[in-house]
Length: 75
Image 1 (cartoon, rainbow, N blue to C red):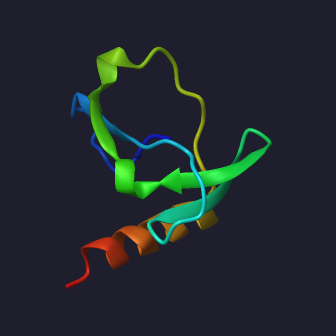
Image 2 (image 1 turned 45 degrees about the vertical axis):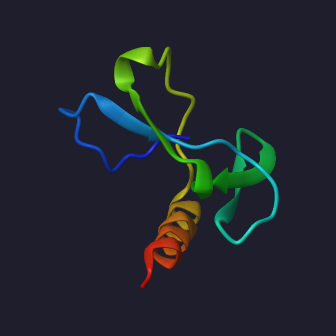
Image 3 (image 1 turned 90 degrees about the vertical axis):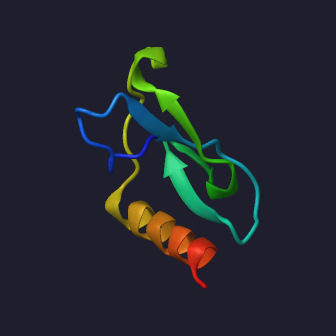
């Protein structure tokens, strides 16, 4: 999964794998498969290393992802 927060002028993108139930993960369905966005393993990669875009998660899942990230970084 890639973040759409980054500017089109920024050469980097954030990616995170799918995984199992943990508080730092958000449930999602992507390309007909159920899984989770693993937010405790986010990595930044150069966009030039990405071969092609697989798609985007829906807005409901994006909201869940942002809520989990807010919880991770809450004081």
